[in-house]
Length: 179
Length: 292
Image (cartoon, rainbow over all chains, first blue to last red; front, top):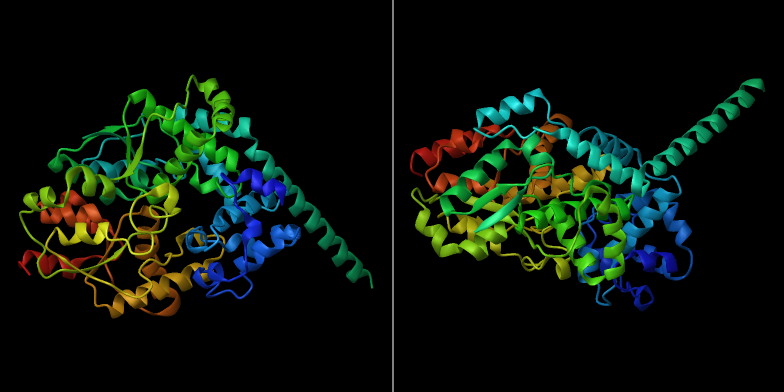
């Protein structure tokens, strides 16, 4: 748990939770997904069972709307705690594919969407300036930031996990075929 | 009123109407927008996987504005959330600032905590003011009924954003009413639109969207007004998806606030890009030109 407290700005004061469930009843995702239970994320983390949260797929269904955190009567930064746990899951190679795609696009254009020909035409139509004068500066900065902060390493692990999983599944298939 | 204009990723590449209408409305109101050159993504899209990468990206943009000596104005809830959170975190933690600056130094940049970040809506409300806006209205949108969706990230976390009441926001509705239009409330008005779950949990993303659209339909709104590119795309393009998948046609036009304001200022719909949306506000435009 300590490591999450360190990552979140300020003190989450996670032990102050009295399990009232305000976070859960305020959560948009929890209204549709019974497995998504922020109240349990907090109690598990506070009682040293954070690995159960980190390894669950449910962790990635947070909308980041911050309503849980805003309404917590104990001032616990629930949303920030969840994000810190997502960061830890990512370090363990558990980041969903979506983020690998985002990182890849960012390294191509410095933005999450590219300034392609169609864009130029549409901008011209509305009397907007061309903005792509020096995209290489952007790309260079983003690439360097990614190198310095090691974000790409997260996805090498994802790839590694995926390959190991596929290998295992293939072996299982082979065994089944042999019987 | 002079600001460093931070456009973000999606607005200049996909939501041309938002950019065009914002620039034109700001010109009318005497808000000078100085484009930030070579800015990078604010970091929000990768915050969930790397807090550190996010923080450096946000700090880089803040440092860029510091070089310009101007506060930042942005049109995006995600960007304003990212930049304000980073600003608050770095201001209160000198150790963190030192650490992040050691990376920025490689680009000849330094974060000093000298600029503030504002959403356009806040600038309109505080720097310009409702009364000044009303004075510029040449063609009041009388008879138009608008539902608003403020979006989460400009409001929360409240302790950082300091924008409006997170539970009962009123700024956007007041700004809409300044155009002469009426606003309607609807259940779950402040609930998330579901956009952030795209590619992570599409089922819930669509369920949240449908819940909101159903309530907006019941409220009999002519138009849904947004101030966030992500929310706008979710509501606009999402309606196409729902029509295909569930054979349900809401047909609710979704417009960025500056488009509505621009129409009230008498700016032409082509200049504002009003017809670039997926759900065409055809009926709405017809009514408006008939004087409503």
